[in-house]
Length: 298
Image (cartoon, rainbow, N blue to C red; front, side, top):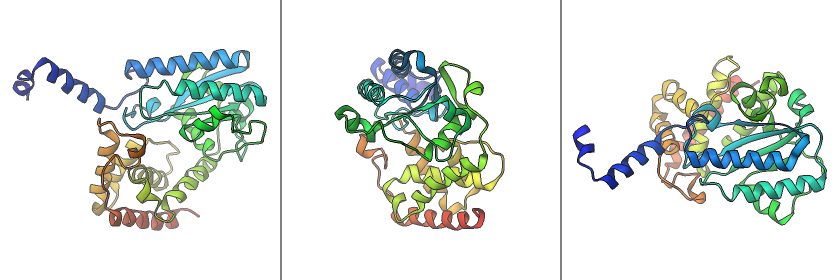
């Protein structure tokens, strides 16, 4: 291997090193400089726009947990403010986030929610938010097609806030333990099962194969024990290789390989990794997961 590497031209060696680097899991501490600069610029913009109303900005998800893969992963952020945002301010901030997101160096977009300090500490159910941003909201934000003055709730926030509480990274503001309360684990599981049900519904797993496979593994990992600890998609996949029936191992491995692949994909290819998937294998895993859910979820 060493001899083979030495025989490469300078350009080929550079490309090889870049490929190795892109294939490794990244964390906030060691992520690519362009990603770090983008996130820090986003933080600076949020501090400027929110000003004295800002409590803190927190990273969660794959980059916080050390399993960020550049071609596939998103950048997950929770912003906490003292007081509710007025509609005009929320609209202004939403446009600013959308414009900032257009400067990102990756295919994966920013997934961002703004909540109040009361919501972060008490987590009412359903969970209200002041503003969401993601790829699905991008064009609406720029066009001003979002009703910022309406009451808004999101069940997924319950799971996001648990991830911040357990494995989040502070990007600015008050410490996590001072801002995010201790949540009822069952509420977290209810939010997880809600997403799980969507994956198991109809043939949704065929439309989002690598996401669906890894999330099935992650949820079954949660249902298999009572550790009350959150897991990443990569950790869920590794659990699946060690715990699911052998007939599913090649499918889980394929999902992990797609997730970890250094190959760039378009936005349209992110659900499949640009690969063909065996529909029968996906539906067999879906059916297995349904049975497991029925045995554990009361």
